[in-house]
Image 1 (cartoon, rainbow, N blue to C red):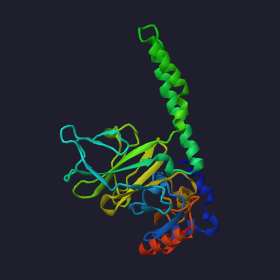
Image 2 (image 1 turned 90 degrees about the vertical axis):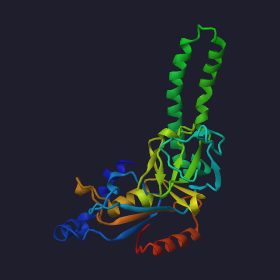
Image 3 (image 1 turned 60 degrees about the horizontal axis):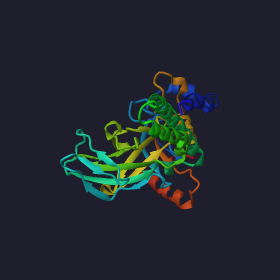
Image 4 (image 1 turned 180 degrees about the horizontal axis):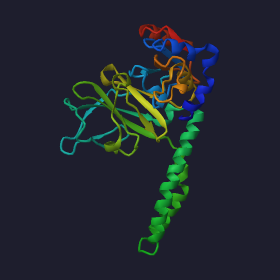
Length: 304
């Protein structure tokens, strides 16, 4: 979504509102101290213009998703095998716990999530296309190696594998299921979503509540996500940005680029709260929840 940073500046009415003139006269009246709720699709927390305010504090204070699409039940608690330090996830995958993970209690909250549940139909097509491309690249490498072994005694097995690879692109439409692990490191709750989908946790990023550490990761190196952990580790919420509109609104309202001020939003000093709501299943009760949440955070400026 990097094109948002460049395109959003064309939608910012700086000249007609005389914002540039005002900020030159009053540089500290740039929105600092204000908290703006972006009630739209989830905001992309990875965008460069949404990292810091003009005073250097985090631009996005917190993220909420009222659609329920990212909710994961993590109430199942298990302990790892002490000898080999692994868990059996709810997907039945063997999950090797990296030694660097700190868990004084030894209790791990487990959940499972289909990645496809996080996206709408349009974004899902993009995900399927990415999977198809990844599978195709992997299969070409495997096919090349298999051709080199065709003259060996495993010729029949190689032929079988080649036939399998030809049909493997259909796997791109199969739902990807990720194991979710939540635990307390003695200080705060942490979570890991196995986006390797094979139990390779060593290379998967550990996240805490976004409001605590403002960290995120990427699914397929494209879709940014962050998390919040609730109910003493029994409920994990995953926030994924897959629509550009909420991010565009956030950029227009409050983006800040320290080295490119011409791309700043109207209130570059303000912080924002992302409130994801746009989904086909949204209804009136969701908006009631949003208003209550906004009031509880002292938010009086809301962008729809």
